[in-house]
Figure 1 (cartoon, rainbow, N blue to C red):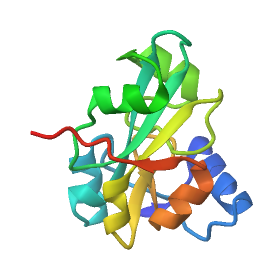
Figure 2 (figure 1 turned 30 degrees about the vertical axis):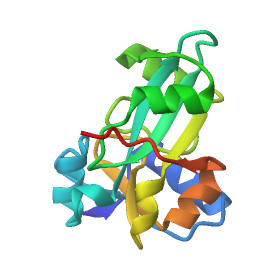
Figure 3 (figure 1 turned 180 degrees about the vertical axis):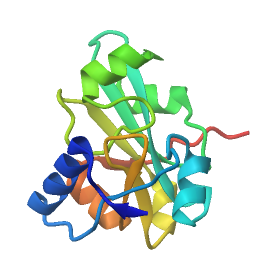
Figure 4 (figure 1 turned 60 degrees about the horizontal axis):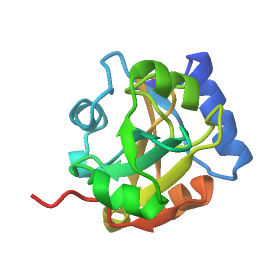
Length: 162
């Protein structure tokens, strides 16, 4: 683990500072693309990873970003009901165009275009969660309250029941 050096991770760090969040974006030699990779790199549980799952709203074409606990699968039906639109899959090109980030590094802030966003209520169970900082090798810690502050998003039950 080392302080951020990649320009995108540094931009995320600056956005966090501007939002009044006192945290440090860190980078790893190994990828943090998946929740499991990030949890291994950080040394936390998979559930403490705040993963960004991106969908494409079918009627508006807008990106819908769900920041979910790394343990949870996202229920597309619940999210569609909450945002008022049917959802479709978001391919890598759409994710990069809509958010400015590559899959595996989508940060919960600093998107290039407006997005609809929801926060997984299960993240509120943890003192600290870890979110992507714009690259597949960078993350940052923050509290659930800070996550709500930087996103302005609502907490919701988005977990797919098995």
